[in-house]
Length: 242
Image (cartoon, rainbow, N blue to C red; front, side):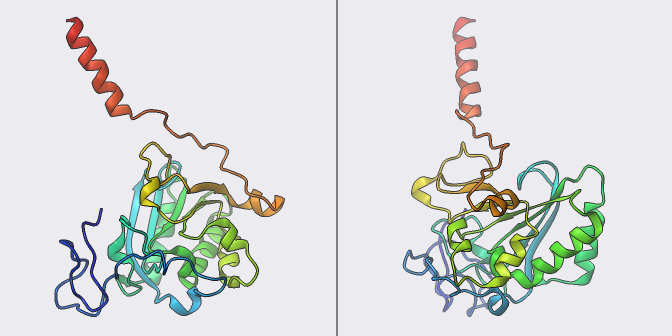
């Protein structure tokens, strides 16, 4: 987790640097609630995206259900306080998305034990040119035998409101499961499944689009207790009895 931030002019506001010292014109600014509530259509991924990928991870189990491949796109103006991926708020942080990378992702997804692909960031809904292309390829190659998960700082209600850019709806048409909402530090909860704060939801996208109302992922299963702490107490009790 970030311990500090870099202003847009490169001046450090804490102990953490997101880029090399010579990259003075890059990196995130200081998070502010005044800047992360866009109006409908205010942020357009077709204009903001630079087609940059910060990371690609294969065979992971933390970014959704089952064994997955995860692509992290760069650029996010939401700038949530204590964002885990603050180093890739910049739309130019990383490397260009290439045909070679796309082919590698498809090859990894072809493994029988891989359940699907996850879109993270950064903000996937503001990197629509890249992710619509990839989502189309996934559907062409695998149909619906591989699922698509996506994280976003947008809420479902914001994505559905009149005036939002059509590329967001197009990307959602390929997505199976959406984890929505900003990360809110004051609502942080480590017991939540696949979410960081209590305001976020895991949404069945296609069923929600069909019914016109939010349908929560039916497999949602949050923890009710912190497991390591529970085991620690059990060990203490066993030692006391011994």
